[in-house]
Structure formats: C-alpha cells, structure tokens
Length: 66
Image (cartoon, rainbow, N blue to C red):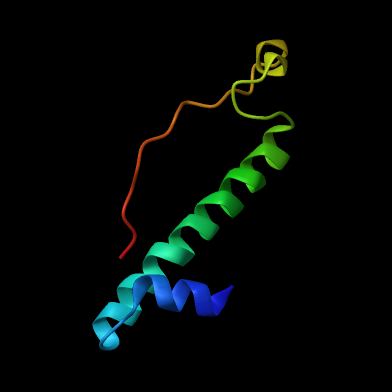
C-alpha cells in the first residue's frame, strides 16, 4: 500500500515528500478527530439522536494546520 502511494505521488525531493505526507496524514487526522467527536458527543454527525440532546454540534469548515 505504501509503495502504491509512493508511486502515485512520485516525489522528486524533500519538499514533495513533505507535501505528500501532509496530504495523506491530514486525511487520517481529520477522520480520527471526527471519530473522537462522535464518541464524545455520543452520536454520529447528522444523526436523529442529536435532536434528543441539548449538546449539539455547531458545524465545521475546512482548516489548514501549520
């Protein structure tokens, strides 16, 4: 799987490797944070269970980490 990703990105230098890692890890971290929020809130995003509690999500928007 890693070899396939390396072939897909085909990095030529350190900057390209860094950018590929940001792309790949960014998605993984986002999924992990979403799962953590679901666990904390006790229901999945856009769930009917959200209406049964006063503890609700306020929405989200894309962000860039430095």
